[in-house]
Length: 272
Length: 272
Image 1 (cartoon, rainbow over the protein chains, first blue to last red):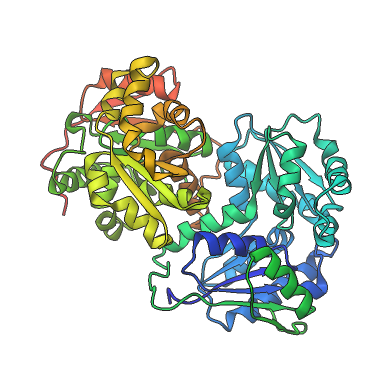
Image 2 (cartoon, chains in turn cyan, yellow):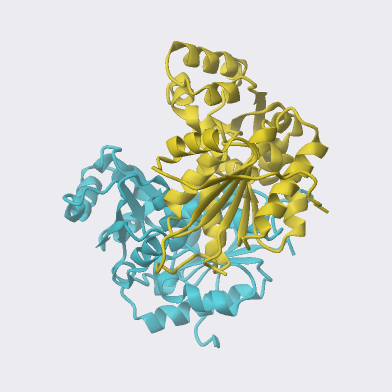
């Protein structure tokens, strides 16, 4: 069981930032990833759609006897984490609580900004998570609809990219935050731009990195870390969209020369 | 059950650095602390003694129906964590694995230094924890017997303190570490001196801070976070030594005007 893979699901390629951290922090673990690229982005969709899509991916990965599921999409975490966690008998992690905990741990003034998709910000999931832990925290949520297209355009350097970041973050300028949570797994790709915008004066929390750490802690506490070093870990990627595009982005982000990608069709899967 | 206290044990006052982080990161949680000041330090003692003392403290705190136990002493964690975790039916955390995970998460070169007591370094507990997670990490352990007395002397500023830190860390100078784990819960008190010694070029990991974060993650995953805000948390401190000295140090470290301390006698408790 400890050698079984970890399942990671996302609305598209953003969750690969979590995969990258998992590979770095837990190099013995096998990973099966599914990105619902064909139906991405989830941000503007209804809760019911997001819930259904997230369940479809979960059911698909269950056939591989995953020992842990990570919902590496903030929007899907906000909508579906609790019910999936209740139903599965393996640990199920979202990206919101790890990000919230990390923010509480580094913030000194407890003035925390959160940027994400419309749905993530509207759900107030980060605000809820932060206030559950520390009720005196001030949380400033901001939807940044232009940042996912920026990341997906691939043009993440130069004047135009800097301008888009500056315009997106401007509404937070009078909030005097000391910590900013990247509440979307696409954003770590432009983390250097965001840190530069703040002149490195604001601590920027990448939920991917934090989730990988908590995954490690929970696997350790449930005695599920893969200790066997007999065979190298297996990485397998599924997408609902174009295999070629997914492969090209994944190879670049994960800095891997080659990786196995398969396109699958998901809809009409029974999910309850 | 979720409103039950968290138990924290240590060989003396060092574990108060963990308490401080717990109070900051989990302000709703009640804490019962026990410091075995009368038999501190544990570093030079035999494994059998450390094992017995750690069990005695554990049994004492169990009467308060603690919902989680944190062994906030690196030496006691190295010797007794596994067997206590096996025996208790609540989550039991040590400070070594959280520190190791945090180091893996921030290190870029995977060249990690660990400083601690003789026993902690000799046990190779950090090396084992680090290599379990990432087998290609280079770990350089260094016993720093002069740092606990420095912290306990209270004179933690000025030339002499800087010189003791510099002399203690000197043996690591040709190891080109990029991350240093403070493998003793006393050391966060002199963390600024250590960071200055490295000119802020080496990332310094405080196990207390990291342990508080993992405690939060595990309480969340086991649905044991205290959500009730009806009554303020309770903090209670026990010491096997002088109540007055303990109280004076604890008030200073925790920046509390007043706190409840009681001296108890522990030996001859049945522990298996």
